[in-house]
Image 1 (cartoon, protein in one colour):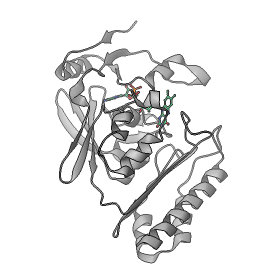
Image 2 (tube, protein in one colour):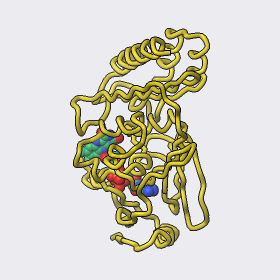
Image 3 (cartoon, protein in one colour):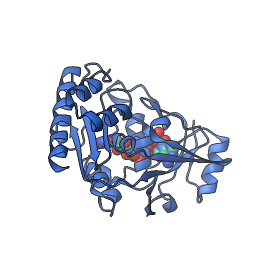
Image 4 (cartoon, helix red, strand yellow):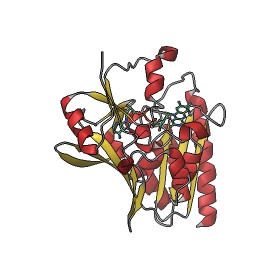
Length: 271
Ligand SMILES: Cc1cc2nc3c(=O)[nH]c(=O)nc-3n(C[C@H](O)[C@H](O)[C@H](O)COP(=O)(O)OP(=O)(O)OC[C@H]3O[C@@H](n4cnc5c(N)ncnc54)[C@H](O)[C@@H]3O)c2cc1C
């Protein structure tokens, strides 16, 4: 037996979360699958549910000089249709399918923290932070500290994720490759997000390990020595994932290598 709540205000959400451990139901595209327990999925949908999708103040994008603040209820379609730079918009246009994108939220993808979550490499690479709010205050955490593992985050039960704060990046070029069995509605075998400008290179690899692979030391070293073989070896040594039903470790390593090599060649030609 569990309760369902549809609070009228954000403060009421915080009160409910303070009293009872609940599933926060945003777009529901991850939660509904969890409830079905198909394909032997282990997670269960047994707690009370608090619906938030009607709280419009949690949706939308605010731009300041240095940041984009993306409200948790901003949908994937909202992002694709927004004025955000292409290095954010384009990856979202490749996620799921049009129908899912209309309801799937930015916050839901982050908090679900699937190893295959396609937005996480982007937010890792861009040094994004999440804002978590409870009845007792607010805290900011870098996305890579918020995600603790596959389906594990640092969110406390009484907290709600309200927004993701993305520092602006003066991009000269970017690439986002999502590799899957088909184009739409598919879990990634791997996803690689890369972006650069004159002084900075960022590379983040998703769906290989339990959490996104990003290594600042490798990025900085490559910018100095331009040694692509060392860079590739460095990333391969960080790829711990094993063969699974989506792909093999060998395939992931080879494709990642090819993607990084071709992106860096384009980058060096441009700079
Ligand atoms: C057919 C299909 C295709 C898909 N394709 C892709 C894909 O290509 N790439 C991809 O990455 N994902 C994909 N997904 C997964 C899913 O659509 C995304 O992860 C989506 O962004 C989840 O958002 P949601 O609003 O539906 O989350 P929900 O299902 O509502 O919530 C997901 C989790 O986050 C929690 N949560 C949600 N909002 C908050 C909040 N504000 N604060 C705290 N906790 C919160 C929920 O309690 C739950 O644990 C797909 C799903 C389906 C069904």
